Length: 311
Image (cartoon, rainbow, N blue to C red):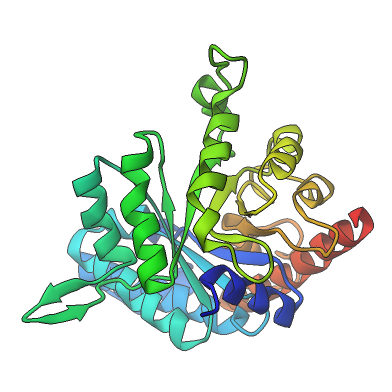
């Protein structure tokens, strides 16, 4: 059986594009040209967000291999927002994209089992096993230890799914905890990185990477380079490019001699490209999707150039 991580890598190779479009949609990000079609009750607002997100996917699915849906920005609108999350998962899969849900789940074992059943595994209903959200990858918070992560790993094995475990995140205060030094001289993110390598040992695919993958931020290039050496079989989801300041030449440190090893996320810089200094004079608000496509192509080319130089 081909591992989920190999399917992702094949998509990256096919499209010559190691990037993922992050869908971090709030209603206030939706262009006025879309909002004007809808009322301002919660359901209508969510319908507007779905149109906006769907249009961006239509503009990029043929050039971008994967999408990362940030669950918080759907959950904040309650039941109607969660319905849109499900709609987006299904729509992106129909378009042939690898779908990641960024929900950062993780709790005691029994609760993690529930989270994993929802996103990766299946629930038995009237004697039939049914997937609920049925996403390809889920982000996982490992800071409650192995019993917190085990249910997700088990479902990766049983249902051929994948997870991205938080190791060194891109936010400014991540070092308050992740950079602390343990009694044996290692930093916490190094400890977690080693655990991720261990958790993924039985899920290594034909490209040498495991479906138990890691989140490592682009905003900390020194740690990114260290973790690539420490975690040779771990594929990286790399946030922090674009709006958060991560640079292409730094991100290239995460890739191996074959130009593989990671996928770079950009959210606001893609979704709101039409507002950016780079594109606002070329594209109108009504051309928001065209601007997103142009930025996705520019991002692809910039990153490929940096990665190729580093090989």
